[in-house]
Amino acid sequence: MKDNVLAIVNGNEIKESDIQQAINRFPQDKRNQLNTEHGKKHLLDEMVFFELAYSYAKDMNLEKDEEYLKILESAKKEILTQTAISKVMKQVSVADEEVQDYYKANKDMYKKPEKVSAKHILVDSEEKANKISKEISDGMSFEDAAKKYSSCPSKAQGGDLGEFSRGQMVPEFEEVAFKLNVGIISKPVKTQFGYHLIKVEEKVEPSIASYDEVKDSIKMGLLQERQAYEYSKFDKELRSKYKVEMK
Picture (cartoon, one colour):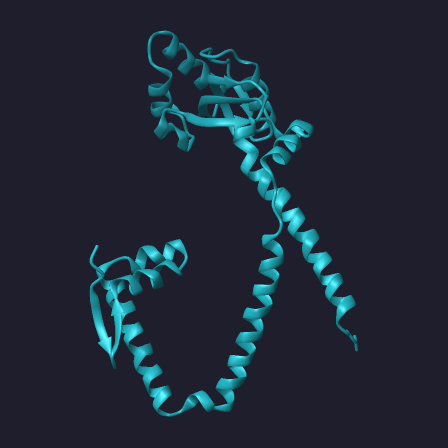
């Protein structure tokens, strides 16, 4: 793909690839704003200004300015320090076999709880709940009844609450939801919010996450632990090598 030149400032070209590289240095939400015609125009104007300011600084011989030299020395120190630390961290690695061994030895850490997917209808009295239950028995769908009668915002989705595990719902609701068989509609269940008719759509039995599901997070965790250890070790080595006076 052709890399078009968008501007030439004092002999220095600014290309489309320069704009894209600059955009990629921003967080994702900011990139979306800049990846527009207006955003790119604004960024190009900024880059032109910086090139102009750079040319001005060179002409004014600011490379010998005391303030500039102090900033430059500070930047060099920071870059060298980060480069040294980065080289030490790059020596740390975690083999796939180690990840597998860790998973096998710690499977209990990756338990997935029992879950249910359920819908409900919420009303303010047991009488209303029983009346709605009768209408459903006579042929009205649970979803249509939820849309017509429920006072919960979930009515817009036919009463659908999605998937949840224990501890996410009030105890009275949860106790019934986890005992109900799939497709069965409960009797009215009283909670602090009112009276519910509950219908379980699906049940997910408790399980252990597969190796493929967790291997990346295990590897990252092991890598971070080892990097922390190497960082501490490097710190001790440096303190023994160079003189440190704490005041």
